[in-house]
Image (cartoon, rainbow, N blue to C red; front, side):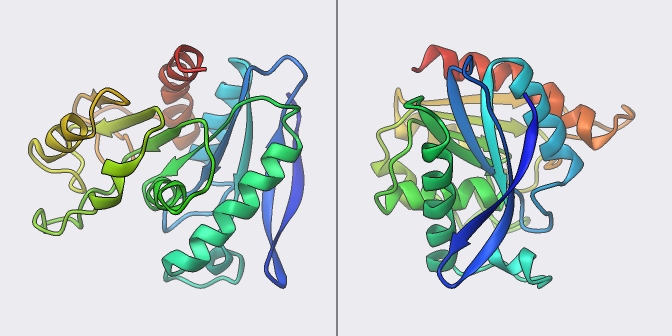
Length: 219
């Protein structure tokens, strides 16, 4: 699949994005980056390139704060509005295929908040869900997850400070049968493993097979 640059209208402005699809794709996954990254971060590019090779069309996009060069993330209403616009853009390009939502850290959490707010999605994919701020396990970001009725895949590093101890296990168990958690041994929040040198694009690509398999199993 060839990745084409696109612009997505959000209110009176637009944000950058990239769409890659083909008539043979079995589903589309819309992805947002983590709080400190853009849509073209090598991790996301490597991940989506590998997904494209597995038959998944993809759409990556920026949030308005990153488009404007600001450091601090948009508030949820703005992030959710952006998510809705990105999903509309993907749906218009997907020829009736199922359209999933997900992302890295903040991007995935905002996807789930958008779905909780009523945004349609065939399922959710979390690449490092930020369950709580590092060092603050009491400040859980989980309440909105329990009302979601779509398939959810959590890919999480076992050394991720944003999901310490067995807290995420408990959350996923409480969500129920729609949620699946896959721990990546010794990986941190960026899915890096101490002593293993890989480029971010390679790290992202390594996660694609599990995601594609999960999506195929939950049409």
